[in-house]
Image 1 (cartoon, rainbow over the protein chains, first blue to last red):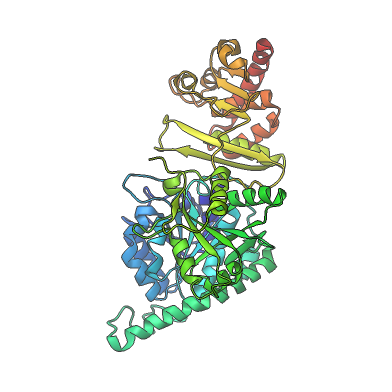
Image 2: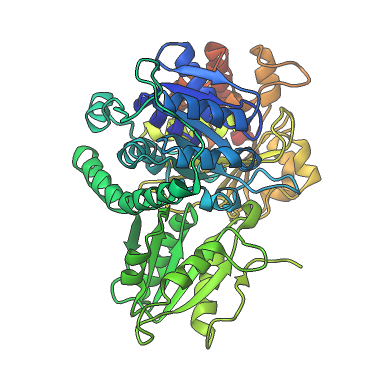
Length: 382
Length: 175
């Protein structure tokens, strides 16, 4: 099963009730298969085809406000076009789930993987979960609805273009009845209902807007613990667990890589090979980016000599975005315990990140006396 | 692309771990495309392109003259080319690699797949690959075609079987 279809299966098993999508590039097979599932009756959902991604999110907002379980999928420029409504979904406290296939933004036109599309939406108030395998994609789609509905915030699940979206690999499809046990019908606390009128999207004056934002922030704070809870519950039923942050072979390591997405898999291969040679290297995988798992990262990274962060993204004028956030999280660690943090920009616009790339990063990190002020770009041909 | 997914499904049905993915630019029929397939007995961790393959399948024979299709192919690796020429024609490659050819275009056309100018050769070539590689059973490939190919399952399976039979004699001739 390709990653795109893993999303379709996840949304279908979650019994999404309204799916709205723009059907042309940068759209993917995600909604193509969902539209087939709706057409042939396998999925009892309303499929709303719209004229833009902006409208797709607007339809999801309306459906979710009315109490439906709403889903959409997009990518790159499509996500950028939704920007305004992403804020609306989050501050409206609507548990919409959206899959984004990480693709680079144009120009130049590029359909390959790059995290800048989702990271540019960092401050819109969406929970963000990055996936490494197609199994994780399917499982996370279902988990995303449970998490969203538990804290009343929208969730973006994120998968790499091509390395997941178009990659076929074995995926276990969970038993639908067990998924129904895990994720019962949505029970919204408030909904658009003509018999019980309420104001939605009304004017909110300075005397209450700040409180709305505080509630949004405290829901994000709750989402960290809530994710651990729903992830454990998933494990109890399906024997798989991911964690907001996963540590891989970190015991006794003096150098840790921090990765997200599919780079993680290739990095595991490199770590295994180096461990077999007796080298004390390990890996920390970040699945959750919003809310930011700062406490977990502080615990895992404190006391390690060197940490290398791999960013398939860039905040121009600053650095890789994961590296920057991790640096900030480590600021209040005791200086004796604080690792030297090395930032690397890799794989932009889908450039292949191979075991050689990761070996190069480990060697550079070991060889450097101290981190440079700017991130190091790896694999650059100027 | 479809060929790599069908082959992945065939290998998966034999209990192997598989990973297949394409690398393409524009998504239209006829545009150059590369597809990759990894197969292993253990779960596959590498998620990057394959630059040093063990086996190579070339669907369009004109590519052999246009680019170095063998770039990165491991010494002693195998090349299966869709071509109406015998394997001996590719003598320059035969020294370093195991070369086999099959006229998948003619076989596909004979089975009514695609047109004479644009035959759909992917199922034929998979039948030939099963025969020459020994990596996957022809029956697994045929079942995978029935399961994965959207239309004309019967003609596609026949095309794979014809190519498997044709390539067997071609290899013997080359040896």
